[in-house]
Image (cartoon, rainbow, N blue to C red; front, side, top):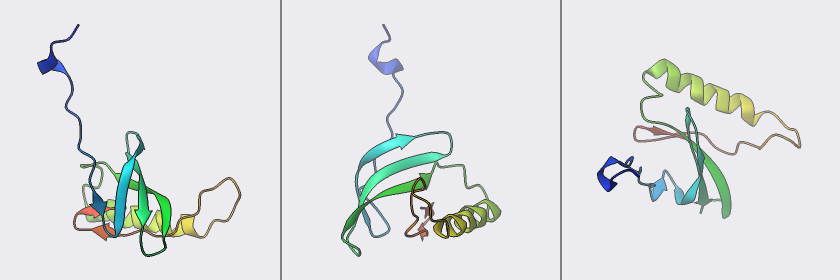
Length: 94
């Protein structure tokens, strides 16, 4: 049994990212975290993918992330989740 002081710290879930109200965490991996969020502009619940801190270490990586989001937004297939938006809120890409 680990003492309480040896447990890993938990990362706080943000309350908003851009215009999106964060409703909860859906999952996380090596690249980033996916949140369940509400988009008040379009009045719908969305999945919001956010890269982990340290993943977007330079402008080239950020540019690539947004370029890949743009390419994914042009894909239309029943087994691919549609991309509705991509952007930046301060230092946070989504």
